Amino acid sequence: MKHSIRRQFMGIFTATMMGMILLCVLANELFLEPFYMKQKERVLGEAYKLIDDYSQDGGLDSEEFAVGLDQVSARYNLDILVLDSDTNTLRSTVNDSKILTDRLLGYLFSDNPVDEVLYRGDRYTLQKNTDPRMHTDYIELWGMLTGNELILMRSPIEGIRSSVRIANRLLIYVGIIVLIIGVLINMYMSRKVTDPILELVDISQKMSELDFDVKYSSGGDNEISLLGSHMNRLSSALEGTISELKTANNNLQTELNKKVELEEMRNEFISNVSHELKTPIALVQGYAEGLKDCVNSDAESRDYYCDVIIDEAGRMNKLVRNLLELNQLEFGNENIRMERFDIVEMISNCIQKDDILIRQKGITVDLRHEESPMYVWADEFKVEQVVNNYLSNAIHYCGNENRIEIRIKRTENVVRVSVFNSGDPIPEDSLPRLWTKFYKVDKARTREYGGNGIGLSIVKAVMESLNKDYGVINHENGVEFWFECEGALS
Image (cartoon, rainbow, N blue to C red; front, side):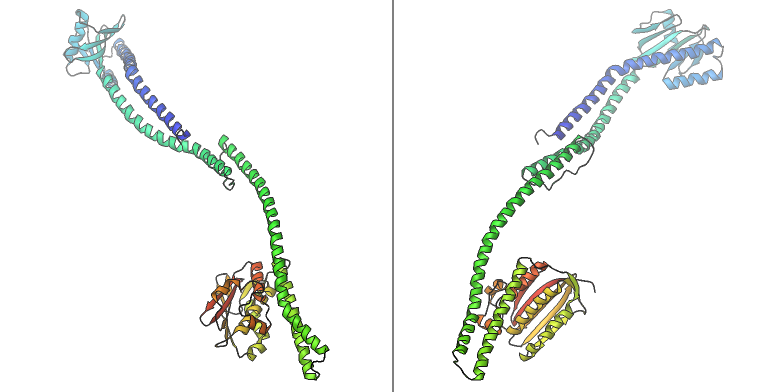
C-alpha cells in the first residue's frame, strides 16, 4: 500500500528517534561544559574546605592529610599547592611546584591577567584563566587558609571539551545502534498491529466475494480483536443467510430438475418395459390362442405350449420384481443395514447355489483368497445380490477355456472382489453403457438365458447406496467385474 500504517509507524518512529539523538547531541554540546564548570566549582570549594579544616587543626604535616590530598587530586584531576606564610611549600601534588608557586605569587603580588572571575570571596577567588606557557584553559581557586597558609588549586578545562567531543561521538554511535535496534523492534511491533488489520482487510475482501470460510484468528483483547470478533459474527450471519437463500434456490432447481428427470424416466421406463414385455406377452397370447383353438391335440404339444406360457410368465414376473427392487434402490426407499460378515463364506455359498448350472455348462470355478475368514463391513443381503449378478453373468457368458476365477484381496482397510470369466471381451464402446437399465451387449444371448438388462443396474444402485467403488475390466481372454467393501478386523 502507498500509505500503509506500517510505513507511517516506521517513519514517525525513525524521525522521533533521530530527533531525540540530535537533541541529545545538541544538549551535550551546549550544556555539558557549563554543567561541568559548576561541578568543578563545587569540587574546588569542597577541596578548599577539607584542606582548611586540616589547617585549623594544625594537621597539614600529618600523613593522613597527605593521603587525603592525593586522593582528592587523583579523583577530581586537581593540581594542588599549599605554601606557608613564608612561601615555603607545605604540600604539592605536582612534581615541579615552582610553576604553581610563581603563578600563586603572581596572583598575590602582581596583576596577572585573568580571563574571567567566577567567584571572589574573603578567603579565596575562583576564576577561569589560560596558562600562557601551556596555552591551556584552567579553572583555578587561590587564596588563604585560616592558618594563613597560601593555596592554589586548578583543573584543566580542555579535558571537558575533549570529553564533550568523545561523548558526542559515542552518543552518535550508540544512537545509530539504538536506532537500528529500535527500527527492528518497531518493525516487529508494527507488524503485531498491522497484521491483524491486514487480516481484517483480507476477510472483508473475501466476504465481498461471498467467501465466508476465512475467519479472524489473530486473537488478543484490544479494539482490533473486538472488531475481528464482530467481523466473524457478521461473516457467519451473512454466510447463514446466503446459505439459506442458496439452499432454497437449489431446492427449487432440484425440484424443477427432478420433475424433468422424472418425466424423462417415466417415458424411458414405459418405452423399455413395453419393449421388454412385448415379446413374452405376444408369445403367451399366441400359445394360449393355439391351446384354445386345439392347434395340436396331442398331450406332448399341449405340455410344450404350457411350458412356453409358464416360462414367459416367469420371465415377466422376474422382470417386474427386478424393476421394483431397482426402483427402491434408486429412490432410496430401502434401508442400508451395515453388518460384519465373512465375505469368503458368502461367496462360497453363492457358488454352491449355482453348482448345478456350473456343472451343466462344464465350467471350472476357482475361488482365490489370501485368508479365511475375511470379514467386511457392508449390507450382506445387498452384497450377495451383487455377487449373484456378477456370477450369473460370468456363467452365461463364459467361453473359450470355460473358466471362472473369483479373487478376494485385502489392501489395507479395503477388500476387493473380482469375478473373471474367460470368453470374448466386451466391445469398448459398450463398457460405459453396461450399467444402464435394459442395455444388452448381445441381445440374442441375453434373451436365450432369460436376462432383461437390469442386473448390472442393480449392481450400480447397490454400490452407490454403499458409497463404494465398482467397475469392469476387459482382458484379452475374458472380462473381469469387480467391487470393493470396507475391510473389518478378523
